Length: 502
Image (cartoon, rainbow, N blue to C red; front, side, top):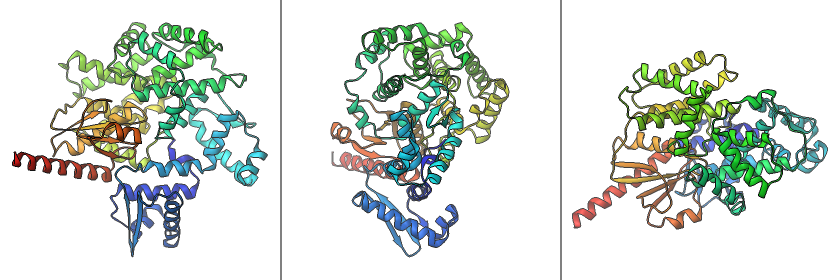
C-alpha cells in the first residue's frame, strides 16, 4: 500500500496536485491538471483555492508559494522546505490515519465515542473501517470487534511500517527516545560488531517501543503454528542479547518476543550489508541451506547466466550483491505486506531514471523468473510488486561502477540507508553524466561540498555550516535535480573564478 492510501479524498487530491506541480518543475496548465486528475475546471479551481487556504493556515507563505496566472499554475518552495511536510499534515487530519493511531495507543476503538470525538457519522466511520480492512488485507490483518486482529508479528510489523514510513522527520522521536534502549543497542553493537547508523538505531527503538506498548496490554497474542519452524541463522546470538537485556529491564521475555525481534532485525535492513555480521549471517544461511539462501543464490545464478554478473567479479563485490539479496529476501520471508512512502508515478519515474545499460524488460524478465522459480512460496506475488522492482533495480545498478570525484555530494535520509542509496543512485545517474560529482552517504563529522537531505532540521544545518544544504522529496524529482544542478553549476563557476584569480 502507499502512503496516500490513508488520505481522505480532498486531502488526497490536494496532495496529488502539490506533488505533481513539484515534480513537473512548475510548468503546468490548468488544462493539463484537469486531464491528469480527471477533474472539471470548476472542481480544479476549488482545489487550488483549498491549497492556497492550506498554505495560509499552516503559515507556509514564506516557504511555499502557489501562483495562478490565467491558465498557468506553478509552485515554488524554499530550498530547505520538505515538500513531504504537506503530506504529513494531510495524513494527520485524515480519519483512517486517526483510527489506526487510536488502535495503537489504546488497543481498541470505542466506535461511538470516536465518532462523537471527531464529529463524524456512523456511516462515515464504518465506511472508513471497511476501507482500512481492504488495505490491511495485504498484511493479513483486520479491524474486528473494535480491535486489530491477526498474527502478532504482523501487527507489530504493520505499526512499525505505519509510524516509520509515514513520518519523514524523526527529530521528535529521536528526542523522545534519546535515553531509551541505549544499553540494549550498545550490546547489539558490541556483540554483533555493528556500527549502527542513526536511522538504524531509531528503527530498533521504534520496534522496541511498539513491542513494549503491545506487551503492556496483557492480551492474548496469535501466532501461526509454523512460526516456531522459521529459519533463523544466528538466532542464538541475538536471543542471548535480548535475554540479558530483558532480565535487567524488561521482565516480559518469551521465545516469541525473541523470534519477532530477530525477524525484524534481520528482515528490515537494520545493519549495513558491508558489516562483518552480514558476512557471518550469509555464511550461516549457506550452512543451513535456508530458503532465503536458495532465493538469493538462484537470483545470483540468473544474473550470471544472463551476463549481468561477470564470472570474474571480485569476491568482495559479489558478497555485497549477495548481502543485498539476503536483506530483501529476508523481508519477504519473514513478513507480509509493505507500506511504500512513494507515490505510484514516483516509483515508475524513479525506476526509469535508475536504469543504466538495461531496460524495463530486463527487470521484468528477472521478476518473471522469480515468480516461476519460487512458485511454491506462500508470498509469490511479493516478487512482482514495485518494491521488488526497486530492489532488483538497485542490485543491477550496483554492478556498474561510478567513481567520478571532484564535487562531493552527501545524501542524508532520515528513514533508512536503502532509501538513501536510491537517492544517491538517482543523482549519480542523472547528473554524473555531465558533472564531475561523487555522491556519497552522509556521515557525521565529514566534510562535503553539498549536503542533500530529505529533512532540514536545525541541528543538521547548524552541524554543517560550511556546506550547501538542499532538501528533497521522496527521492530526487526533476524539480530537485534541477535545483541541485543549479548549485553544482554555481559551485563550478565559483571555482573557475577562484582559479582565475589565483
